[in-house]
Image (cartoon, rainbow, N blue to C red; front, side, top):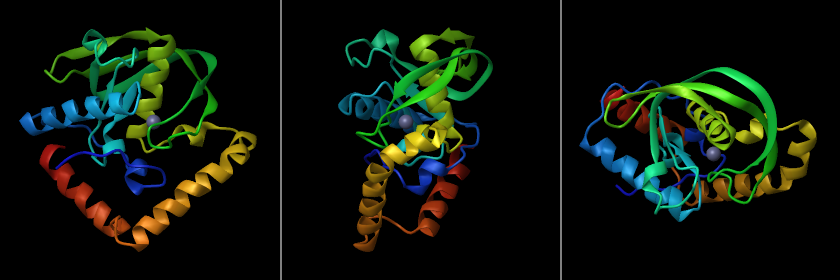
Length: 195
Ligand code: ZN
């Protein structure tokens, strides 16, 4: 099964992921594929929901460079707390390509998570990495950055979002995309394996 990035308004993007309890070789392979997809689409973070998987994990590399493997990080079951400061910054999303908006995020945030090898990650991050962590953790709760825009900002991108909605409906009509029920059943199956 080759992973693919799904686009708004695919229902898996609204899935709230349960914590992972099992990391196996298949999951490691999927994580490697997520990094590949993230680089291919010039992103700096990619959450499991974005590749149609119900797992509470995301990958990130703030440099966005596949050569900079030192900066690659996998966050499993991330929990953010103690957010400090507010800073506005432009955001986009590989699941809504081409759409951008300014989003207010915490400048600093504490993160607790597990790495792919099961080591505990705990620390305070700030700046761009803090923004990535907040954007990606939102994904795991079924939240998209467009949900954090003001009504005025949403009005500005309404036409672009509508294009995605029309495309989704037409792909579904020709049978390229499963029904909501089939998507939910598949996610439940995959969840049973590892959560
Ligand atoms: Zn995103």
